[in-house]
Image 1: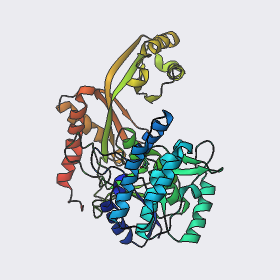
Image 2 (image 1 turned 90 degrees about the horizontal axis):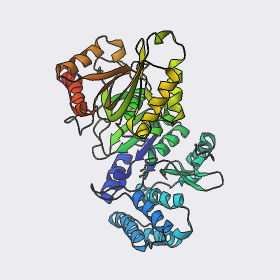
Image 3 (image 1 turned 90 degrees about the vertical axis):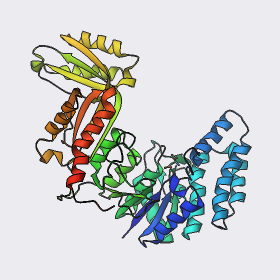
Image 4 (image 1 turned 60 degrees about the vertical axis):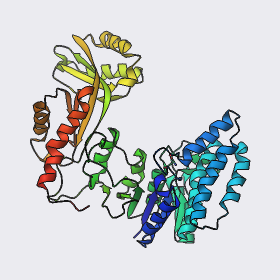
Length: 447
Ligand code: ASP
């Protein structure tokens, strides 16, 4: 069995965390391929090494001396190496790097966070080090060349048998270091899992998986143990994130599941993300609830609109002209709405309304702003009648006015629009009506 285990920044922030990683890796002989982020925060208001390296770049760009900053970064690595009694000459190597920063590319500089972290981790785990620059290949358009990467990774597998690879970067064909987006260590792990044909991609972080609601809004929300890729996309899009959004694509395409696990609590079940989730009587009706505030809906109505072909397209063309991305299009018989991100239209909504009036000659155009959207997500909803009725009933009883309703096309989510000020309460009401109630009915989950 091949497992790729990726450890995020907080999992490698200190020597203590390194020890937890080693225990996890040693607990399972299948964990032979490890990807690490750069050392992250050791406490809440600490700085991530990646952010400090970005700061180094800013100093260089503005010709400000950054000797002390580099010393501080060096000290973070030296501390880990000393605490673990590693022999890698970290101070010497880091100083070599520091002396060259003026001549290095900004992406190269930032990539050293994961590079040094992986160097130390490789020694501590007693595994070979594989430089991501020799494994992950970027095309010039920024996408990963999966074929070349697979060839290099399989070659490394033959040569080394196991390895620790830094996440977050790779190189173009001409050898230039290139970074993924922020949080991109998750993508590196996914790319590696795919290229090794792994059975599972383990993503070790500092939470025990995906939560069914935002813990800042709902008290102690339930952890989601099983979720499908589609459900996760819906929830992440609406603001619930544990993984870098793009990390799912490389593994999803080839059917490799992702397991989210907590380095600080390795025995907790975590969350498994798969293409389909098996049916069982313990499956919940609602998987999770997420939402975002500050949307804006433009409602257009016109008598006999239903007979006029192309009217929605004409309206969308107006939004397209202004470069505004459309989130939802709830429709009625003689009316429809276009829901967009409030911030995207803040300075052009009058122009857009004006253009809609010109183009469509509608009976009315009304704008509702300060709209919050809440997505109630559950793959099992489509098979059980009455779900939306219960959602609306619960909100109605709580006196919350629903301003808009749509359902995603695969029926895995119901999207509700409420006023911004009702947002937190609406989430709590839906959560109590479904998730909390189910927790009472259901056999206790093993945690
Ligand atoms: N170190 C990078 C970041 O902070 C990448 C990662 O942690 O995945 O964004």
